[in-house]
Structure formats: structure tokens, C-alpha cells
Image 1 (cartoon, rainbow, N blue to C red):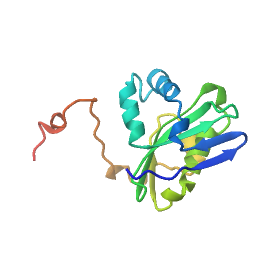
Image 2: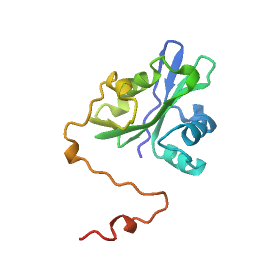
Image 3: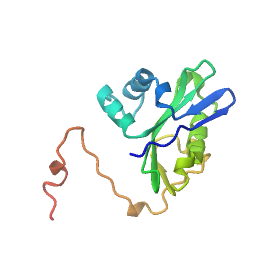
Image 4: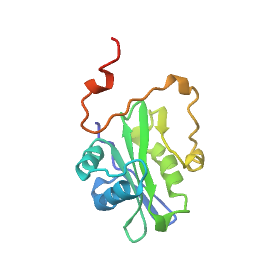
Length: 161
């Protein structure tokens, strides 16, 4: 992955930053593993690997503590997938996730990216405020999910070639 340049923006006493040194990995891991529906039980090592292969986005309160988090999986040229977004309970209701989803698109190293995606079960209105819409042709999209460590061959062992 090409490492994008540091990007920081301030708003209403909060700092949005892609600085990896600011990340509170303990807080991120605790929230994702214990409080999220999409990453329940996430192992710390798997999170660390995911962070290494993506662009982390932290939002920090005036006291420098993490208020919100997300990460971007991107090639910095054509595609970006925003995922693992959460706002800690004490900072909810301030529009931080919407701000993150909108503001990260202003990162100069992501200016060529034309296809932005995310997935959510329950926060459609949050991301609609940032310009996200349902995919225009869901019949074009496919996915494959497998358990961590499951061999790739298991996905297709009974499929014809």
C-alpha cells in the first residue's frame, strides 16, 4: 500500500487525523471486539494487521483522547472502502462519523478516487449526510465471506470450473 501523507483537520474542538502514532489501539480493539456487531470477538493481532494495511482515521477530543475511529482500505487511485467506523458513546450526537465520512474525501492523496463504498446495517442516515447512497445496481455486486483461517479452496470446492 502506498502510505498517504498525514492529513489533519480541526472542527468544533475535535481533530481528525490519519497519524498512526495517535491511535489508541487498545480502545479501538476493545470497541470493535466487545461492542460492535460487525467485528465481535476480533483478535488483537488481526486488528493490528488490518491497521497496517489500511489508512486509519482517528478523531480526537480536546483532551487528545480518541472520540471516533474508522479506517480506509484503498489503492489511493480508484477505490476506497470506509469501514470499522465508530464513535465512542460519550461523543455521540455530534456528527463525528458523518464528518469523518465526508472529510476524508478531501485528503489530497485520495483526490483521484472515484469509487467510495461502505457497509452499514443501521447507520444509513449518518452516511447519507456525507453523500453516500445505496449502490445503483446491486445486481452487479458480489461478495464472498469466509471465516478467518479458512482455506480459500473451501469457498469453491463444489463449484464447477
